[in-house]
Length: 285
Image (tube, rainbow, N blue to C red; front, side, top):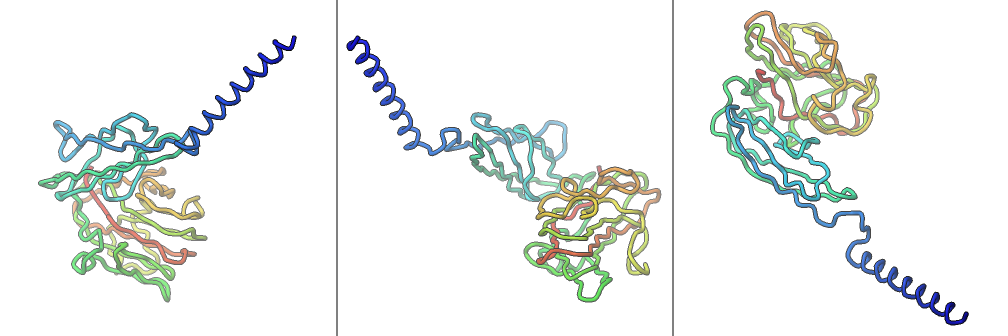
């Protein structure tokens, strides 16, 4: 009987020591054994045959649960095999953020040089980055409320202090479809609207709020976005319906060839620091 008890005690002690050793090893290597300690975010860039200025981004899959990509206009969730269009000539820095177990992350970058702009999808907006005085000169302001203004900085164009608009004239072709987009960021707001229009009326000649052509897209605390801090492409984070499509869409078309005006206006309870925009685009589909 005593031999049997002693044997059981010995087995128990051996098991306890083994478990203690395993626990100690996990703590030395990684405080949370379910969290990856190193995530490989490397990826390759391959031109897509037959597609103008289009590239396949292929992330290595080992240990990667999900991916985020940034081609210079802000990070967004994407696939590990992501196809991107870079329609404008220039050098792009592409950043891949790989997310592994437990939320561990790794990043990698690659540069892609685009020799010529896509004639069909080139950006029709001039100075959409607002970086230089030359960029800024392409835009005009409409101030609706006292104390409101659009100002320029390294962040882009920022609206603060109330109700004001910024606009630019663009030449378009009848019945051709175009997409509008921009990177927008700001703090949590209340009773705020941020609206984008593409109308035929010159905003300088319009009395009162601009609404020609109907809203294309935007942010609105009444519609459920802008209540918390935001940053990203407006097409992805906006919640205002396209008036002509009665759905969330950044696609527009026009019944005549000629000049239209891209108008961006904002007002209401804008958070301190304002709302900033950059990388403004209007492109053919």
